[in-house]
Image (cartoon, rainbow, N blue to C red; front, side):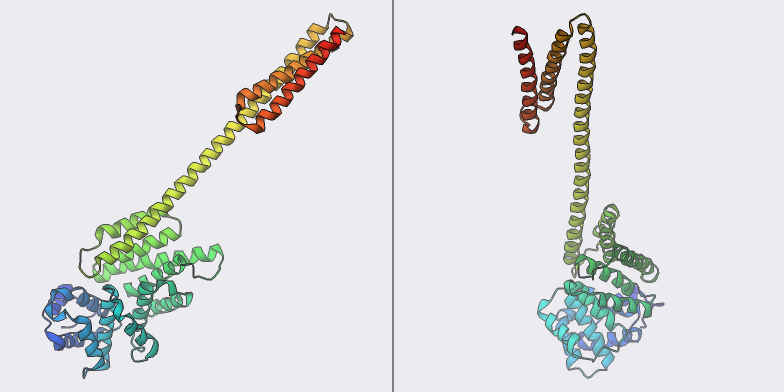
Length: 371
């Protein structure tokens, strides 16, 4: 059985996994897929092995068997690497945290596997999924280099986009101009789009995590509606499987909640702005009504005063105009109280003062007339 990017047959692979017997069977399986190390088919074969482990009694103690192959078996280095690769994938998918230190010690202290083509992808995927808070721009640069070296590997291409999303989600990126951030997010989004297309062409599958990554990048760009559509696609098409469904769905639903909160906040901001605009319009309308009333009152005062004073002696005409002016002030103040209500102190107190001033003018003139 040969596995490579051109002849990879999922049904044939599944049959081979199902027929595995004991540790020797796993080693034999690795011997058949190892020539494809560094290609997409190598990663898919091991991932398929991890997915189907619960369907094969031989694989019940899978992590122990893999650990034994890597540490004690009399096999080649490439077989030991395949066992380590499967061990990492199994622990990552099934969240076997008791084994995390073993993996990270190997990542950090040994050069045993660093020359294998898929090793960079393995370490970056582990970092992105297990320790996202530790992702830095250096890791993003490594992912881009890995992509450049493997331009037809959907998983590697996607990982670059996913790491960019992780970097910005955790705010660990260096301070940079908005244009640079926008450029980085666009490149990452384009990478995920390419990965989705290549996964259809090469693997014949649409991976839900690719759509989740697409949604994360759309969210970071502020395209919440498109982000919601992408994560809904991931949730709808996530396969029901034992090995990672609950973990994936938890992440998908957490992200969907973030999007819904953002959409709600955006809607609330819009409504708040509309309400502010309406309040400003109401205030402006009230002011216009007040000015219009004042202007009409002044015109009436002028016209009425001239007509009434035309046949009066000069002193009486002046007194009449002053009384009308005082009446206008009192009327305008009362009009303001009616418009703004009695509870707004910023309007009530000045209006009372103006009304009192108008009444004082009227009373003063009337007292002067009696004198």
